[in-house]
Image (cartoon, rainbow, N blue to C red; front, side, top):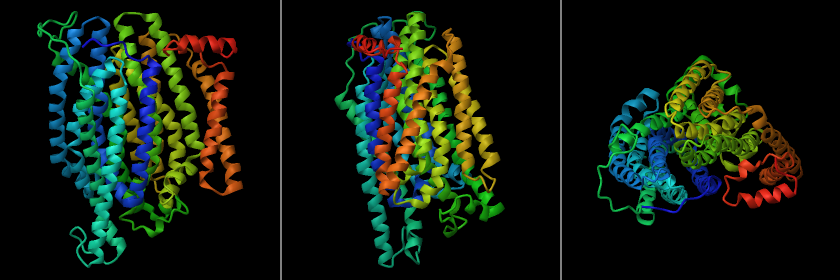
Length: 578
């Protein structure tokens, strides 16, 4: 099982980020046409199933791999290769068994929960996604082991395989479901068991089935990812004779107990991270119904030009929820998904330094991770805020009503994305230094803030779904501030966070300003929605130059790169090193 030392922190992060970006691009080719195929109502059912499923799915994609990665990296750092092998072998039966139980729980419990949240028509979609948990848990073992050896390529490549399979299966199945339903309508037959007097009624009957078909594509994609890892990235194991050898310095000698002792708090943290989507699922549609009951004209007036008056009061909560989750939150999640790669790559590095008690390098590495995360998150979040409507119009050009609802929400979520993007690496570092329950407590606190914000604001007719966006912002702000406080205290780092983030913030402000002005100029000159692309490119160029001129990069940052000394020498020669 002995392997070469894997990628450097930035090398591994670069692999994961490249994979994540490719996955998101492929995901856009899935989500955008899917929105056009099933419409706002269909996306409401699709995202309801996803919101119900995601908190549990997070166990297999965030919790289980972290547990395996942390224990494998610590064992390898201390030369305990047999221990690492035992951890892998135990995880290979333990986590899939948990995944099977969770799949059955979703399958049998979906009906009652969906009745509670007020969207029972999402039942088929929810049941269709349940088996994905089993396959994802199988993938988590392979990904966690390779991440623990600092080999991020299997994780990145398997995610791409899943994204391609989701695109192919999801779109084909959704199109087939819609075409079959429309054929039934045109031939005077029942549309999935419902009579339809016109095409609009037919599409309302088709939407739940089409959403379930698309979700089935997601399940098939997780199966494809697990099969790919098992066939193309098998783990090479040692021949171990002392299978029951004790773990030095550990009270829990059985690998299953060690895995669960680490996985439980990490999984709880992952659950609470997704608590925001669960809070939205439970509260938004119910509170929107209350807002509509109180003052329907005020709800319609809060989204001018969106054509909400043409949507029945009974369908309006699902439409607003679908616009919020299917459009605004889809774009919002792009930034945290990228910086999550930094957290995955940082965890084995910080775990090794912590295990070896190298506090000086630990503090420098943690500071660099924070700075690099901020350098990615701040410009992306500000750009999302200033270009919210152009971005959504470009991505969802066939859904203008949904865009007009989602754009004001995305302006708020752009700022929230900065805080959310910072939380993943902070939580990874907290878990790496042994504070595995701290993220759970902080996420729970943030979830309470989110719940209160939704309950108090979404039912206000003039605010309605915008209150959910503000709740997300406040939630992640609380989590981030608390996480930074605990982390800096734990590693005994006396960092000036204002100074640490000042340069990335200044450069990001120039970036956002350039992109905003560039889009305005180009759009007035051409009238094309594609103007947002060169505007973003111009902003990115200004940002890169600003980072160098402000001497944001330090020697400690470059040490996280395998070829860092070469870049350090070059930047020092150009007087661009901080």
